[in-house]
Amino acid sequence: MIKSLGDFVIPAQAGIQLFKDALFPIHCADCGQEGEWWCQSCRQEPTNLAESACYRCGRSNLDGRVCFNCQKHGAIAGVMAFFNYKIPAVARLITDFKYHSVFEMSQLWQKIITEEIWRLDFLFTGPLTIMPVPLHPRRERERGFNQSLILAELIYSQLKNTGKECLLDSQNLCRTRFTAQQAKLDRRARQKNLRNAFCWNLDAVVPERILLVDDVITSGATARECARVLKQHGAKFVWVAALARG
Ligand SMILES: [Zn+2]
Ligand SMILES: [Zn+2]
Image (cartoon, rainbow, N blue to C red; front, side, top):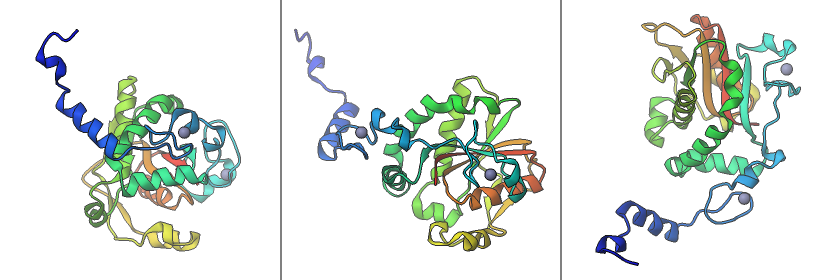
């Protein structure tokens, strides 16, 4: 029974959302079902998930650490990735996130990070500083945001919610050089393109244990160069978290 006029009024926010959903319905990137960017059953399909493995040689292991043979090729201790970037739906979702619907899609990643954050539990043998891979200020201005910072903030707040000892530092690792977009280059050119692209703010002390956050890790060249700079300035341990691994 309607008791007052108030019962007729849809709150303004909900009304706007309903209107938007009616005009621009979203669909699951996999099965096409309306209502979600990626429905729960599709994103839990085993083929969509990243295998836990050494990111460099692909040998599987329990926690994504870099295997003994690959350790001499860079400063990264290990990589935790949620999804397999080789699956077209995964690549499409991340491209949409980066170039079109960043704020709308943050809700999807927040949901995934909330469900999967336990996968980082084993890293908490001491405090961890969460750090996004920086974008060059010019590219950040063009795009309007740094997608890695958005992800780093989501990971940080979820870790805090579960009582973990962590900090967020998005200021002190900087991009000094405007580089060509990595996606357009081959493996060797990627590494060269990144030489001296990052620096550490010398007024700040480098944290000992760092979780570097990026959207995707493919060759690993960007994360490896960041890790090199961080370790050069005194970091002891750099692990990488990414939405997907190629
Ligand atoms: Zn689906
Ligand atoms: Zn390896």
